Image 1 (spheres, rainbow, N blue to C red):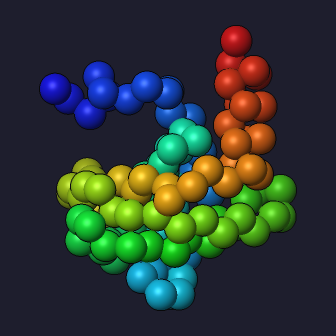
Image 2 (image 1 turned 180 degrees about the vertical axis):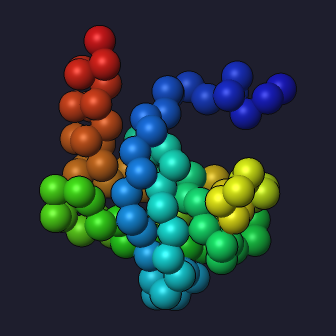
Length: 107
């Protein structure tokens, strides 16, 4: 079954700058989309599946959001490096608020 069919929650396209790594955020990337359960990141430096990851999201409103998770999948992304899908270890309240606001605005 394709990933999109397995998702219980829709994903919101964002495009925020991020830093990430296994122990500390040292690699740069950009978010592709997110939901309360996970996020995808486009970067020239990706981590292999099953890696633990720490992520620092630099939002357009000037807030820094820190989350942790696990890399679930990776693949080559057309003309923009590679992309990896991350499942959060636990939901982040601030990300949930952004998600809920985005969902409300799209209806």
